[in-house]
Image (tube, rainbow, N blue to C red; front, side):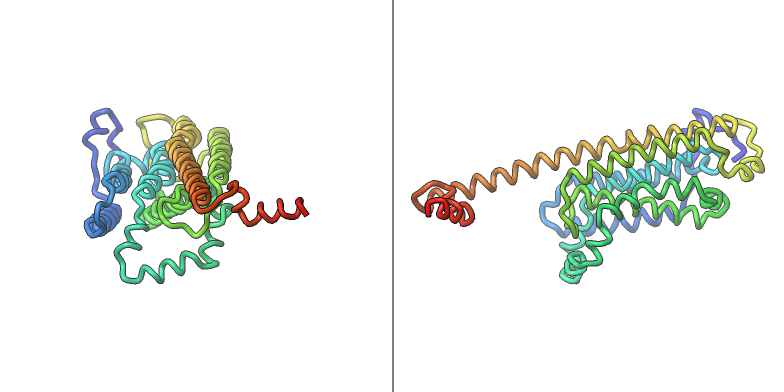
Length: 299
């Protein structure tokens, strides 16, 4: 990109990214079609899912897509959003629930989801790797320069970022059916690990050598920040931006945790009330395990 980035270009620089547009149209059309077939499907979920797809278009077709081959910090912003923001919004749309409610082979999908392989692939350690490792693979291997030089590799890496992020938020939020029912503290632990890793990657890029130096030197950009400053800004986006992008998820996770606790408390209260109405005696005398324990003590 030879035209310097300016405030005017931020508003006027647009480019059609055909793979991204096709991706958004297919997923958005399929989601809306399925949502119309499910009675009283929450509008909030539809809004969240479409907002997630909108971020894809914003990253690839706006000025961010125009200048992502010239500025390191633009690429860093794309990575953060595609890994942390876009998948969160897509997961809040509960798309798998829509699939299970509308496709004719839903029973087969449920059996696969309850299988050993699905449980192994969604084990917390595997999910942690899916969230943490991709930025390291992009920036600390030749993959980063390959995404700059080859459009097909770039599109594939973007898709993989969204898929990795979606697997994480899907299994942690649990708005859709999941193969595992891990405690919410596991999700907080993974989020804390992600914060530490973001800091480590940010420091490596801040203090380390220039990434894809040969590509950027050949580009001979004469406007904007120099290569070192550009990479420092990108490192800050990966570090601080990644942490800020995770805050909405932590809030959503905490809210869901509180709702689950309230629901469990209500179920326990209802069970105790039913036991009390069913017969005489104290409530623990109707519990088989506690009743047996008291019987032993009396003997």
